[in-house]
Image (cartoon, rainbow, N blue to C red; front, side, top):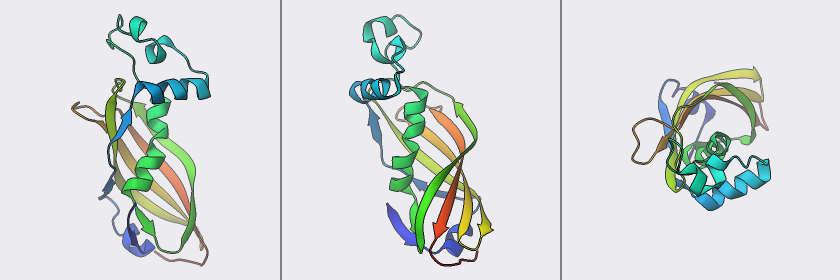
Length: 158
């Protein structure tokens, strides 16, 4: 995780890039484990021989696996906000799976702060633009507008 920052300073970064994560590998083992947990065992994810005969020329990560990697990417890339006791996922206003992620690829997240809105004195809605880069591939794996709610122990101002 990056350094810590006050909420006012974080909110002042609206419209700016606020972090890039390290690379995470989406190897076949991780893809297979995700397939088992989610019961999405479509051959393009888990059968290298059959997937080799598709336009993908091999297995690809599930779009939802790539999406689920946003959390560890955010923890890695974004600053801790002083006084925040927790953050919860509030959902997405937009998600697009732009480019398939071939098995064995490395991905990383790029985060841009769109807005911070006060919901009450101890809660703030954050809106971030996120793109997931695939190492060596020009187009991103996904782009999303991600919403989170930051909770604070004490009333805060931005």
